[in-house]
Picture (tube, rainbow, N blue to C red):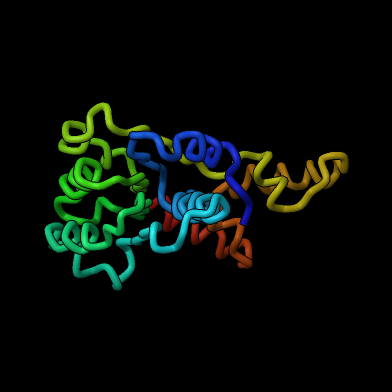
Length: 197
């Protein structure tokens, strides 16, 4: 795993301001990893574990909330402990009525909120209305070629390695999930095809 320095800097610079951080991007582009990296930064700054609330709504562990936003709000506000809370919601658009929950947390609690979604529709309709002027958006893209080189641990001086890496990058792109996977070339094509479908 490599740090997504460009995106991490934006989020760290926006840490503890009044804005909700909305991280969007195509599926498997690294949004969840970016959330983990922000949490690591908070821990490095001395933020305690009881202040960090992280939920991935693709996990069955959180299925109870998908159709019950009131319960989600109640359970989250029950974590109030007199300290600032840091909320991380991965794939929040899966929760019916999530926009009202995020807005209420922003209004009712001393908090810093980070949410991810797989596409730009996360910012359409009700969210844009409820949170108008209250959020900043960070669009996450697959790895750049510079990030690809870092992941592959290629020395930029070795022109032959860089050329070979460039050809691989042209063929498979920069999707982190494809590059991290130790799979045969045919399986990489299949995996990319399922992402695009």
